[in-house]
Image 1: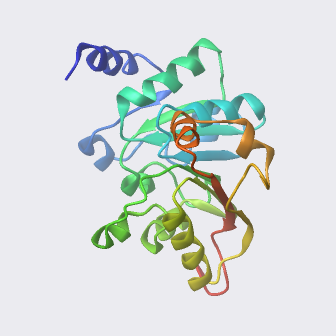
Image 2 (image 1 turned 30 degrees about the vertical axis):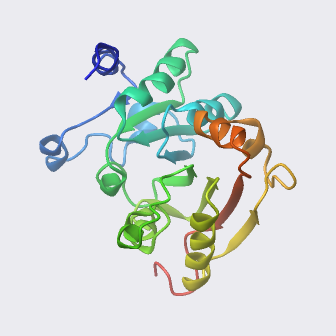
Length: 227
């Protein structure tokens, strides 16, 4: 491990808005579960997650644009997340936090109805068939999200990968979930100003490679789902 990574891991430990409990700590119960608004943010504003937040540019960008909402970036790569956490600190953003964990453990950090909105930005598409269940819009992950989300929760997906995008559309259809918007090219039909004005490191790489950016948003609860 490089000294740069070690330095970033060490600095993450000093950030009051950066959380990375180990399995033992989670087994005792995460202290902010069900209490993010009151005990951390000190308000009653909606809680929005970015899953697989990488360097945290999107989390920070949303927080800058929407001070009336609370944003939490979630990822397992601590050295990458350092950048977003550092920026939030430098800009004195009080509506931002970061959680370093595997998304499979997301239920340990939030309680039922605590999350109002989820962004999934450029996740690993997990193209191999045996890894389908690891896709962040697979039925198993959607079930996890339902355990922490409000009934009117919106899920946003932004990706360069057409296979993953089509898979998500099929999952939405199979589960009879409300699809509010989708486009295979945000530059021609963005559907949301946030989608085109806040760019991540990976999005810029994909754009340089000539990839079109896809976007969709949908609801988590359909007829007979999550009842």
